[in-house]
Image 1 (cartoon, rainbow, N blue to C red):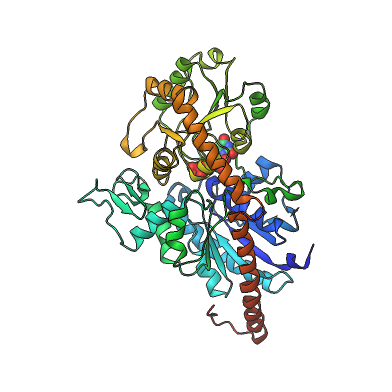
Image 2: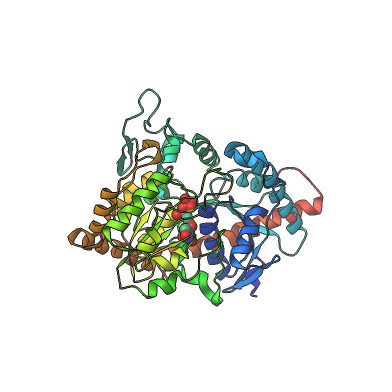
Length: 492
Ligand code: UDP
């Protein structure tokens, strides 16, 4: 371990797959640059991660010149605790136990030879930067959605433009560089949102935006130039993506993954047996759960279009109290020659496989980045939140997709004819070729951004320099406080 490995960074993630993946990927990139990274989320998410990826309890692994360690915190709740079923109550509970944990971690490590130099969180844990500030430790935020979505929340929080309200629910929103229709904004900001609590939690982060010294974004300069330059005049914002593809995160043979569900066997082997650009990949991320009727229509669309497919039909998320989906009678037998249905896939590998032609996606930002940066066109099927905005960008701005589904707030079912028509349009003919060329253009730009000296590579280097400089200053403050045995708050 080099001397720089003494620099210790603590990452705190909200316990959801779409949050854990990008923060863990960032952790690997930082470790590869010689830092000691402790990745943390709740113990029950940690248990799932350990089980799904065969990771030992006290896990520490070398990555490049540094190390990555997992350390999870107990949320003190039984599996069947009713708090888990209410998102608002659960989030508040996690704030109480999480604050205690982060505080203890800072104190424990301040007394050891590995004091924490920087804490990084993702957006559903906006209180992390408060705890960091109280202890005089610098903090940074990893924004895990697009910069366009960041722009929407920022403008909403600062009341810079008009947003839909109960009086005017259908107005357009005029953001710099783009106008979004009422159903294209992140719908947690819409008065009819099915999950307003999530809007509230994310907006808490915007109240705290002056506390992190830097906002890292899992995007890349080429993809979102206008939005990034809008903010770079007033804050330190650094696009560092696509994190999943960063070659340095794989240094030392590291393949540490944060899946919370065990991957189904043989997805890649099965893809190896298919023709190039012949398979439709279908997945709606870790949370979106469609009504059974929608699953029936997708299944019939697949039957009638006669395309090959790899379909992730996951079990319902824990605590959701819904029945597992069933496929139409005879579906599996009729499609045995050309289709595979699994419960969880190694999605990054699937999307980079030459047999995959297109991706029917719920447009979570991770899935969107993984698809674009792999050069795979998409059929957009958003359900809620930022997915609606991402779908608009995939189709109208990036030119890499066809609109297929509607947000769940619209309460519409896409029928089998529409599914068949869009699948064929995305796979063969002029439109398919145009989408593929655009997707390949974004893949090339992503590869450039993460290569040596590319924009994201430079931003990560600059961020590590920031940590070293600020961390060293903070450590001096902390050690002088420890020496004086003074418990006052430290202005950082
Ligand atoms: N994912 C996966 N296998 C699957 C489905 C999803 O590995 O079968 C991963 C995917 O690669 C992505 C994450 O789970 O990194 C989902 O994040 P996203 O932001 O797309 O959606 P969310 O689950 O947060 O709605």
